[in-house]
Image (cartoon, rainbow, N blue to C red; front, side, top):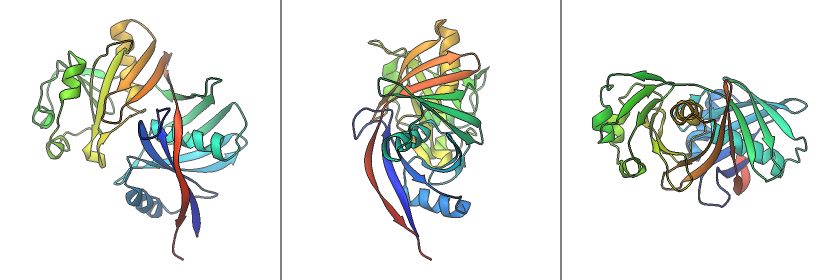
Length: 265
């Protein structure tokens, strides 16, 4: 069996930046253990699989090298890019049905793709979970909890300087740990995302994290539109908007490679 595969750098307008995702278009679902094995073999933060549903609608699933996840931004962006760029999808909007509900993606005239995801506002907490400070090697100014733990710092420099102990950070009982701070030079806020608990030590650009970051920064800055930057080694930019209970995230994507997976009989 031969399966098509694409590797796409998401949230970047050039290769070798942003967040690489593998995308495997399917005609029908493979067994979950096969998709997990493919994701482990790819060894990228996420591998996305999608199958056609009807019209402009598809079903989508995402796997890290270790587990299936319920929401992934950059691999959704990459999947939409594959449909528009390589599979001759023509409509202005498509819908991915996922474990997190319907996710809409629209193509903009400027070449960017816009994700429409559910907002997941965090709640303030007043204790440091076991392993957090030792794992980060720094003490956050403020902590908030959503699907991920949000660690707020004073400055972008503090976020950039973090050198986490991933073994200790994996003991923190959240999907991931987000470090964030105000940005500079036209960037509203910056972030980094660490997910050793789900097999992703540092994710270069994390769309799903911004479903939590955008509501936080909207309340703090009293605005609803943002230029966000994830300041990992690869880095990536997102243009975000809080719209009621949804977060819109726009970004570029570029294809790095395309090929085939050969599965044994």
